[in-house]
Image (tube, rainbow, N blue to C red; front, side, top):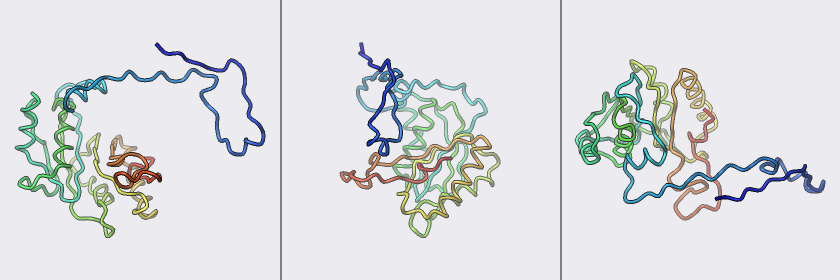
Length: 224
């Protein structure tokens, strides 16, 4: 079991320190219990993820639509997707619609991972699209604004859009970020949820092994 401690009385700090303290918490209330660690044996696969995060499998094709947003010439292979589904005993379900370019003879790791696992963790029960946006911004980043504006051209807008991409926040101008945030806000108000990458190397890391300074990523830093 766990031993939990909390204060039964009010607390105070010396006045000389007050200017350096913004907030004090976790003194009077019980702290949050640590989440039970589930041992993971072997490789990561859809079943392990379902168990680890207690994912409820939705009813097959319940009218929901989810989508993968793909950038930077990352393509997926329909035959690789079928192999993935066969390997893990999943229903053989293809991508329902692909918008934008997709060279299936030149699949990329990023796009393949996104497509296979977005379908896989739901046991292929949710209609899934791929939205591929070509080109880059002048700074070499993903064209997030072009992608967002282009959503209005779809027959309908997915309820969930997975974006496994992000840029170092300092490489994005404030004006560009504000316009992108306005688009996120507008679609969010319509009921669309965006999930974006939070960095390939962890919080505070710009490159592998250099994690001494916090470096924010965009659009994961977007409030919308």
